[in-house]
Amino acid sequence: MRPPSSPRDLRILRAILGAYLAAAVVIAVQRTILSRENNFYIFRAAWAHLRSGADLYAAYPQLHSDYFKYSPTFAFLFAPFAVLPPTAGYALWAAVSAFAVWYGVTQVLPPRAAIVALAIAALGVVGDLQRAQSNTVVTGLMILSWAWLERDRQVSAATAVAAGAFVKLFPLAAGMGALLHRRWLRFCLILVVVIVVGAALPLVATSAEALRHQYASWYAIESADAVPQGRYGTAAAGLYAGLMGLVRAWFGVDWPHWPMQLAGLAILLLPLVHRARYAERAFRVQLLGSLLVFCVLFNHQAESPSYSIAMTGASLWFAAAAPARWRTALVVACYAMVNLGSTDLMPKALAQAYYVPYMLKTVMLVPLWIVMQLELHGVIANPGASELAEMDEPDVGRAETVAHGG
Image (tube, rainbow, N blue to C red):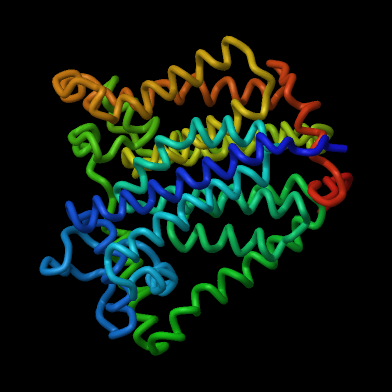
């Protein structure tokens, strides 16, 4: 049984939540009154366009630069934030996103470990909120899907996976967490139903014919949105493209993305062969951490704010094992390179000459992910397994793990 949480740990967790929410409000003021964050106004305008039947994916230079590239369902779900005045809407969007990460982490880790993970993830979360990006909320939904699978709440887990996928497609990968539990085929069927229902949700605000045109337009813009590789490493807040961008920057190759992505997917899934380890909570949490790093490392459209997803994965991995000097050194190096390197602490001359062109933001994620795989395969011992196993109690515990077929 898990020992009771100490009042001190719970106070610290509440303080972290307060800091996350306070940051959301401050950032909203900063990015709507003192400056203008374009991404938020893209999302905000999408709801009005959906409701009026205007093409979501057309250019609206009088409202914002760039294009809306998310699903019609995301435009519908953004309505609560869009109908409010800009500062209030931004604050609510940022607060919901930050809360999703906080709540997800506190559900998959015991309090003391959650404190560590949330502290490590904080700077990446704040950076994402400053751009009004969706990476934080997507990360929270992916973590929550695993937390709810631990409790055998399959409908809730499927809803979290589908909601993430309506924002960005890659959160569908979080569905692999169902393979660690019984009745995973049932989960797959539930997920299909939830996706179908979610895809039809915009019918509440628009006609069937208009929605059909929206989906056709979305498909067209996504098909045409192949990122020119020449744009990799040209802007500090721009495209880093994960491992594919790193290879291109260092070796000058223009390989297609899919072979490297397919290899990465195979490596990600390979630990699932260790069926006897499914009962270890540390194994399950660290597989989730590996998944979050994978979603950035093998994403050819990963932008600088997207790396908050990977750093949240790193924080889960670190918090799910007992302290060790080499783990601390690896996480500190990742934190410095990924997070601090993107701040004003990095001299502008060094950023322009090396950090951005050579994709140094990606470099430390490579050894981190390799170490994650070695741990998942048992090559490197994980002494944190026994501590996390204490969470497996009836009222908080995971769903019964796979003993035979789904």
